[in-house]
Amino acid sequence: MNWSKLLYLLLIFVPASCGIYSFSGVSYSENIKTVSIAYIDNNSALVAPELSPTLTNKLRNKFISQTNLRMTEEGGDIAFTGEVVEYNVVPVGGGDNNTTSLNRLQIVVHIKCECEKDKKYAFDERFTQFSDFDASKSLADVESDLIGTMTDNLVQDIFNKSALNW
Image (cartoon, rainbow, N blue to C red; front, side):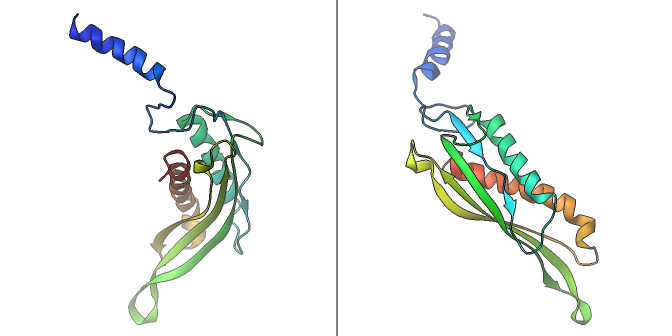
């Protein structure tokens, strides 16, 4: 038999015979078919209006695009709930004449993931991201860009914890 034919047959039949497989690295049990992601409320003292919808939508889109799980409104085999618990700006860099050269925007979210079908996917954790910006700029000047980048990173951290068990 030709080696290329053997390789072809292996590529066709081996993935189909496995109970758990993925080309993207995601490895949920085969009995897990749905995911639900509740709206992530912003319960921090300082509220950015775009933060909660951005974070919620990016997390939903990540699971839709990176897994074969079907999104449900509630009661998914894997169910996420969460809230923004901190959203604040603090000075971090010292400058000349007792001025600050850098400010830090910090976002902390508390995420709970429940999975009745397989407890190994469940967790209850806080995820933190921060980004420093020039103190000569106001938060309003940089907020939208920072929220975009930081929510991307938060979503990746949450996804990694759930789907890749990191």
